[in-house]
Each structure stands twice: as structure tokens, then as C-alpha cells.
Amino acid sequence: MSLPDFKLLRPRSLAEAVELLGKHVDVQIVAGGTDLIPSLKQRLFIPAYVIDIRRIAELRGIRVIPGQGTEIGALTTLTEIEHSDLIRRDYPVLQEAAKTVASPILRNMGTLGGNICLDTRCLWYNQSLTWRTSCGFCIKKDGDLCHVAPGGTKCWAVFSGDTPPALLCLDAELEIAGPAGTRRLALRDFYTNLGDARMKLARNEMVSRVFLPERTAGYRGVYRKLRLRGSIDYPLAGVAVALKRSNGHVEDARVAITAVNPAPLVVRGVEKEMVGKSVTEEIAAAVGELAARTAKPLTTSALTPEYRREMIRVFAKRAVLEAGTK
Image (tube, rainbow, N blue to C red; front, side, top):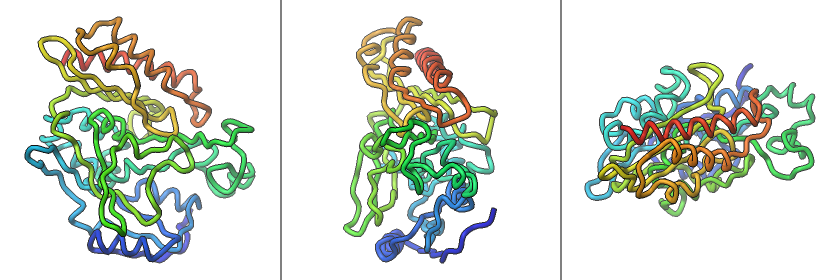
């Protein structure tokens, strides 16, 4: 499949990129291109302009801000995060999640900002124009019917990024750049849980940086992912766990899930189950139950919703047990 016609714009600075976003309405941003380029070929987007931000050097790199935490540029590649000694030491759940994304070649291209802003996916959406035309399209693109939940008014396309659940466990915040300057937003407030309008990001805004607070540095982390193949594939269910322990007991605990809802979600009630206790089979099983209840998979992938929900339960239990023994 070929790309549609568009005009390519290549800003050299964040300010120039924001200016272009404000100037042009029908526009898409490309960073690594690992998600956008296939979507352009499928005619899921046919923009008049594509803004290539890869040359903006200020959006790259990982650096420590003393007394505050760690700042990661939105253009930092997943490979850089995977191989960063700082991330491996202080935020291991993020390193574990990053190394599971796709394949080494795609991680060399894919960026943290791109993984955060990943488009939601569905069997009925991620198809060629010819295929989608034959089905009468869907709510997410060009139609008014949800094939996943017929009669419903909500798009259930799932969010399938690997790093956002890890970032949620770390209380990450985003820097968002726009015409009025930059603003900070907690990642947990960034997603809408709607498949067709997934982010709280204005048309003329872009994610520029990610901040990891110093208070979550050193949390023990585990990420587990279900996919059809051992590489390349998006997650069909994913669980991130981050724990802080003291004197053999859990001082703080966070669990987040991905690929089973229109947004990555923090699992509620985990702290009540775990804080002040030692990690046991029973506690891990209880957390797995909480995670399974949070998951709302529908027929958006090749695997059944029941199987994906059960794997969330299994992965959450295993991840809690593993994090509790590290």
C-alpha cells in the first residue's frame, strides 16, 4: 500500500513545531513513524500536512533534575530507555516495559512520546480502506456503528501501548507544549478511556517531555505482556507492577493494566490489599482479582475477551509475587 499525498514539514525547534500545529488544521505528527506510517497506508489518516519532529534535538535524552526526579524527552527512543543504566536502576518497571515493545529495529525508531500517544486499535479499525468500506466503517473512523458493541455509542478500540502502564505506576507527569507555552499534566489524567478520542490533547498541542518523580525512584518493578508472537506484536493484555518495600513489608504498591480497555488504567484498591503486609500467594491472588475486574476486554483482537481477562489475572498475580521477592 502506498502513502497518500501530503506536504512534509520539518521544524528544527519545539517552538517552530507548535507554530506549525497552530497554522495548519489538517495535520499529523510523525516521530518514529512505527505506528503512523502503516495507518497512513491504510488510509486511516489522509492529512494535508505531516510534521516530522525528529530533528528537534531539545526533545531527546534522559537527565536527572536534582531534588525532583528524572526528565525524559518525548523523542527519546525506546532503545535508549531499554539500555539506560539510570532507568534500569531507578525505574526498572519502565525499562522492563520498554524492552518488550515490538522488535529491536522498531524500538530503535519508536519514541517514548509516540508510545504514550499511540492510537487505539481494533479488528474493525486497523484494516485497509477496501476492507473497512465493505463493513460500512465504524464509529472510530467514517461510520456510526460499533461492531464490537453493536447499538452502543462508545468506541471500544483498545489502547495497546506498553510503557504507559509502567509510567502510571511511577506517577509520571507529561509536559505538553502549545501556543500558550507548556503545561504539566499527570499521566493518569491524560487519557479519556474513549477509543475514538483517547487523549486530552488539543489539536495545536504536543507532548514534549515526561517527568518521573524522585519519590518513585527505586521501586521494584515488573511488566508482563500477552501477545501472539514473542516479538513484533502489540500487547493483547499487559500488567505493570511497582512496589516499595521496607523491613520485609510493602510500603507502597501500584498496579496498572493495558490492552484491555480504551485507556491504560491504574488498578484501584491495590494499596489496601498490600501496604503494611508481606507479599504472599493469597495477597497476590487478591490483586490479580482486582486487576481482572478492572479489565473490560471486548472482541477487539484475535483472542477472546475471556482469555485476555483471565491472563490479566494471572499476570498480575505473577508480577506481584516476582516484585515482592526482588
